[in-house]
Image 1 (cartoon, one colour):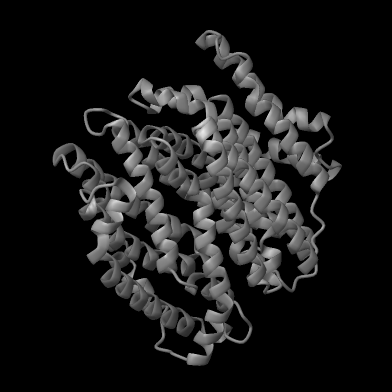
Image 2 (tube, one colour):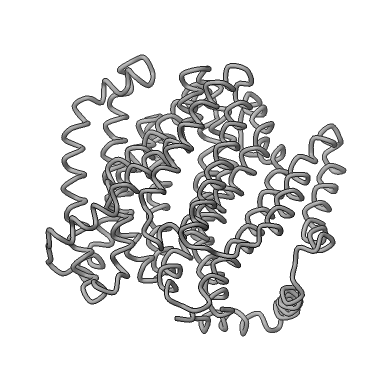
Length: 505
């Protein structure tokens, strides 16, 4: 099992490096988006609404294909025809995207009217629809790369795309003065470049194949997940749609900034774990030590995510002041700890969810997501009029907690895994106390405040030691890790040793 854990950690680090690049691009653009010279506060709120609309569009256009393709790719019955499965899935996905574009683009003005009470943003929404369609194709190619465990190639190609998008975004905004339109024109261009760049890879990994029975089986498996996927996106974006309807665009702008800061943890840590473990989880379905492996993945990934949560929470005030160009955005810092703590349960849900996928209980996944989304809508409607952005943040936290808990209960019934729940409770309790501790010294001077925060971040793992979070064997491994990597003279040798880490089949 140790080899599998190391392989997962290695893949997570590689994906994490790529996701760091994603967030760097996002953070580079925030000072521009919050600069009154280029965008008003309300326009930043509009960008927030358009971004979540893009996520929803991608989910709708994907239908059931990405989830089904992931499951069928490693199915014993089709493992010799992976290229054919990829070709069939890609062609069907392309047809669906073209159909939706033809259907939605003519009514982009209607969408603009619904979202912003004006048709002025219809051209931007047209670019958003086209960009989302291209992103769906990108996502399917990316899934194939991940399933083949080509993590380095995945990172290289996606970083290149990010550089293209960032360069074009800066050009369109700073040089051409295109505003919001320039943002989505850059995204469309970057997605097209990505598809063209990987066209050779796509062709090499495709074989002409079509089987209606196979496609029907994939749709039967994937359709409940498709409905659940749409509900999952709604669960993650209903807070901003609710703020757009129940509050002001200024509230959407503040909340969007807080979400962008908290999403650093989701993208770099939680999503990296998800990308790394997806192929490993399915490959280990029939291994003898798989349940203990799954349990440890949840514990270790939760530790990493919580450590990041503590760090972001402690320094949220400084982060907001550095990346935002206007004091109007500083109020966003109040809700950052609530939002980042919700990601703790998002990560736990992503890991525990695999029990239902392994048991092929995709219908249960959909029911859970739909019920969680319904709860989120209710909580947002009740809490936003009273607490504004704080109400939306609390609604998000409670919804993610509910989502994980129900997923955990049903997944354990379908396919039991001995998760270390006591450890996870200790981890969350300690992390929550550390995350809200800045409220006690927010009025202190900068130097003293930073010093205290650095001490707290450093102390967090040792507090967990006092709370008996670590097993004796884990303490020994940590000591060995520190001893190995603290010797600078052995750095090159240690880095080279990472190439030899392989998963245990």
